[in-house]
Amino acid sequence: MFKRVLLQELRRIADEKGADLVFVRKRPRHEIYKLLGVSLSVPRSREIAERAAQDLIKAAEGA
Image (cartoon, rainbow, N blue to C red; front, side, top):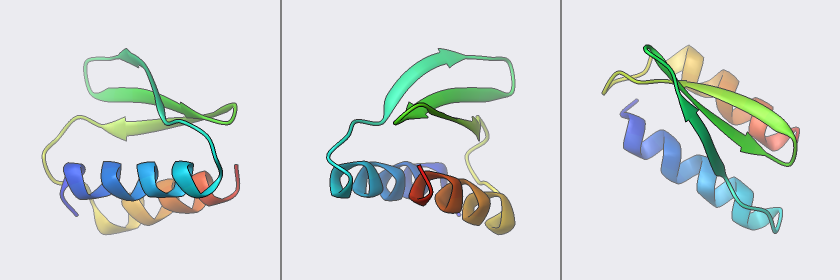
C-alpha cells in the first residue's frame, strides 16, 4: 500500500471519530502520529507492506 493512501485512510478514521491525526515527530525510518492518545509508527518508505498497513489501520480503529 502506498504511504499516501494509508495516511488518507488514517485521516478518514480520525474524522469518523471526531479527532485529528497529529504528526508528532520524524525518526530516521518512521514517522510518529497520534490519534486519541494512540501512537502510530508509520514507515517512511513510499510503499508499506500490506500487513503492516492493516495493523496500523486496526490500531487506529481501536483508538
